[in-house]
Amino acid sequence: MKIARVETFLVPPRWLFCRIETDDGVVGWGEPVVEGRAEVVRSAVEVLAEYLVGQDPLRIQDHWQVLSKGGFYRGGPVLSSAVAGIDQALWDIAGRALGVPVHTLLGGPVRDTVRVYAWVGGDEPEGLKEAVTAQMEAGFTAVKMNAAGRTPPIGSPAETAAVVERVAAAREALGPHHDVAVDFHGRFSAANARRVLHEIAPLHPLFVEEPVLPEQAHLLPGLVAASSVPLATGERLYGRADFLPALTAGIAVAQPDLSHAGGISEVTRIASLAETFGAHLAPHCPLGPIALAASLQVAFATPNFLIQEQSRGIHYNKDADLLSYLVDTEPFRFVDGQAHRTTLPGLGVAVDEDAVRAADRSGHAWRNPVWRHADGSFAEW
Image 1 (cartoon, rainbow, N blue to C red):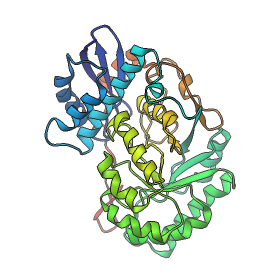
Image 2: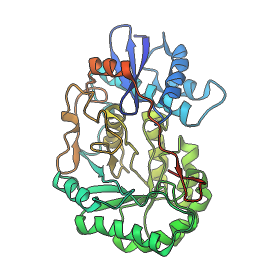
Image 3: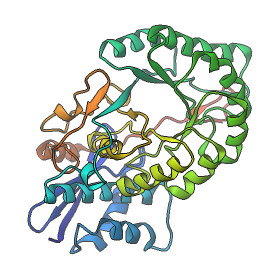
Image 4: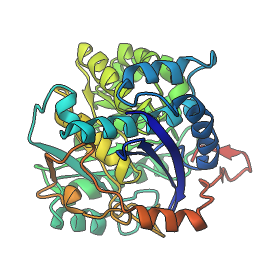
């Protein structure tokens, strides 16, 4: 069995899919994308495909080494995301060729269900409590929200109070038996984060995500020491070496993205590294169905897994959503906030190839917004 063809598809709302086909007709799918830079990652996949065509698809770990390191320059979001999507597709091929789900190839399942959470906004306070209530009525037991929108370096008393009020509104709707995670999104300075963490600690967030920017891992030890709130980070970290400073700092939750951090192969290694620090895995995934399918396969086989992000109903999905490109949506039917383990081969999802090819004909050019403070200076989005 040899790799015969590698294709990419730019599909709305902001995704990139990768299809790898072997010479005997086995097809695997992956999702290599950097949101807002999908076209750049597409070009990277095309370059990496020059090496892949003609190779044995089952040599997954060897291909990961060559694709990640064989160009001498390594790392970063574009290369790591291109490798991630290819890696997902190769694991999909391996599972389909052998007739087993990927979690079996990873050593077998350690759980039968995976807890997932839903997004409820939070950039603006309007409708937040209603959104949380709606997700609870849909069966979810955990939600995630942004702490604030555009955020100054040091918040005023009113701005700090507004964050607390939003989290309090979510907590009131959830009650004491459900969870809210709060995303600072790298919008807070360390000083501002320290102040806000103290104020929201009595509301018991499940975790606070990206309390500071990813390049400020050296500031994490002070935040960990200053607060009882579990801290999480990782959506903008791309490999074990990137995660090591954060784990050493004492984060409670590692959040690699299966479409950014080198795919299934590297995220399983990140999970093992996190376990040695007593940290848990909560993969970042506000993306499409292939990325989520890959995340779930890892979750079923990872002892120190905590909870899984998913994009049903997320505000980015205007032209298509998580279920738009699937033949069968059953794998993403969440019951009581849980995804149930599938025994389907590979990643466990059937991609609607006709729909993907049709979507690619129009493509997309999604870009994240650029924010500015009131004085005109750049603001973190």
